[in-house]
Image (cartoon, rainbow over all chains, first blue to last red; front, top):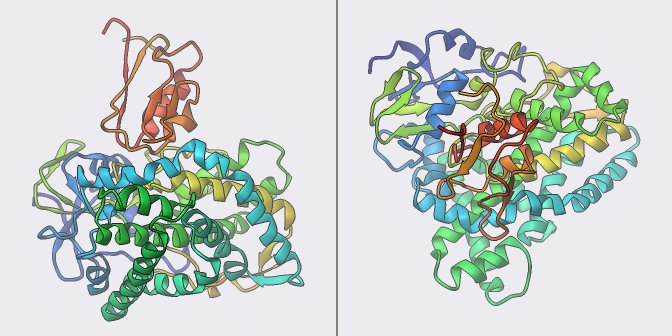
Length: 403
Length: 74
């Protein structure tokens, strides 16, 4: 390849003093344009760090997400185990990808998501009531950040909330990019077995939830195979539980680290401020920090360069979202900036299916939380917080708070 | 080419659309989604005075570049 070669091994580490920012190496390499780095097994991959380049790559018709193709880059044996052969539609290319995504898309339109707002407000309000009873301190993650998406996705999928601990446990094993491959395979098998039994229960059942709908409108008429549908359920569960949890946790933490922004959200009467703040939090944190790995099926034009067919590609959203050419002073949180157009949900055909639901959950959280708990603060020193650098989605394990 | 996009014509590539819904958020006056397929529905195809920014935003936030703008006469 004709790109400057770096000795860096992917993934890059974050700065432990600045754990809410992407790895500082992005900024050092950005002026080089596309560079070649090494994966854990020595395989080369082209890394993009500019916003425009990352967008070009993710939106290219020649880019592939198919992890079964030769030379597809992996970051560890664990990610080979959890994603290698697992052909959920996030790992499929058009046109098959589009068919499977389309089966779900009507559940996530703007209109459908807006209709959910009263329900989401009720979930969040009830959890804030619970928190208020906790005598002035709590673990923000288990008390608030986890239960919100859990309650919402369980309702949408028609899953009993009492099974949420089982889901959390298996999801945590599955999303550990440096975990034991055998554990990951086992966790997946257990989730798929759970869904396999569920399918039998839902055939012919009445219900407006997504799972019952897919079983009876797609599986029964033969539009999707049973193994493929199981993978779709697996993907919905992982995506619904883990990503928004981490955005609620880290988003709150980032606001507490920026007290002026927090105070503005406590005091604001402006209905436009929270949506703007949510986009900025999404941009700044870019929690989906491992969903950017691709392969060039054909040559991909990027700016004035060309990534050759067969090359492994890294197009990390966090690098693009902190490119000063697109977002001036990118490492400063500015809840008034226009952050729309950020890459936190990706770009191209794989852009997050649940993004409007995530936006709704975050908008309700950051509308209600600051006003109910204006004096919220961390109950441990910031540098003692247990971050999750090896998790598929970046987050914090626990976050003791008081008020 | 005109300095504003007022009067420009909007077209959408329905086959490319993945139903992300970002255009609806950006410019509700111009874009909706089909209830069953989630695909984009164009509500009006000529950009009216004062709407240039929101339509341009819809073009920019479309993840698959399925919204096109053509200046009139082009």
